[in-house]
Figure 1 (spheres, helix red, strand yellow):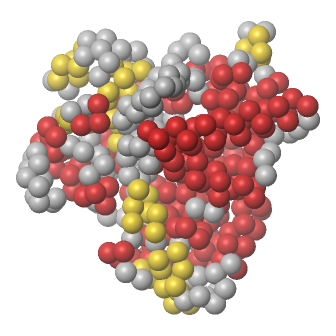
Figure 2 (cartoon, helix red, strand yellow; figure 1 turned 90 degrees about the vertical axis):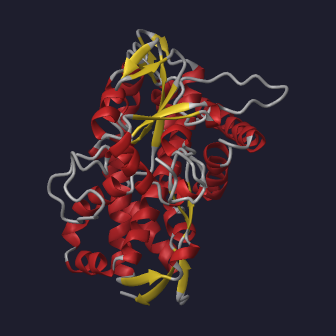
Length: 404
């Protein structure tokens, strides 16, 4: 497949680049062409990797934990920093059997539907507060001023930390997961700040335990032994990183879509009970996350020879646009009744925080549509996107046409 979309003449089937601005801005035509052409695309960029685009293949790899390990889930290798040998710590997102299941069970009580429902009222209050902060402005940034503001404060509540540090959390997450994938200095700086923050919080909880997730992790045991400090630290880091960027990106993508499709906005304003169904469709259409797996042994998959240590990317958004599974896959059908999307991943590593993300998205859209029932993009070409591991709008200027 040549890159007619980018104008560079690139053959995306053998030389894809997930950080290419063309790919970040609109990966869907590229995935579609790859899906029709090759089973696995290949690149030597960013350490080299393979990339399936079909729902069936992505599902198969996600479920095959024997041949495809989760110990390295980043889409590009961690850039080395001179003078420091960083050792990865094991969180539930990056663990394999036999560790994964018992460690995941420890975290799950904080993310059941009943548990996350406790934060619904606070979530709505925050949403109203962010919209109040817009004042009488006619043009606002729905990403930076709204979508980005919510997840760090909800994660702060779950962790029992100061919500006023939310802007710091966002900066660390961007430095670690967005900029840090290609900038080792930014990544190391953010990692050091996260590590220092977590060490401070753990020391405080040991002296003053509470009802928060950090205190809970410190109190848990597996087979009669306390949960290792490295595992506690890794899972707190995971909550900060995965709990912020993914949900922020999903809310932002949903608002971007509604700003560009007034007919969908009008229907959701008229039928607010449809919002949860629409959220599932928006998650399908604009799934933000790509994960990676590492091949554990020389093997073959979809007709390709894979070697031990190879990296395989799992773009869940590509699977969710597969016409073999979804009717009219490139259309957003906000009342889609049959929706087997895998925006939250699949298999044993399916996102533990999916109930929380859904609650935040539903609440954020409901409050926005109550308060701002009509709005449109100020300049479609001025919207900026982050890509790589997590794709979502970063600058999203909208014009408010009506207030509720």
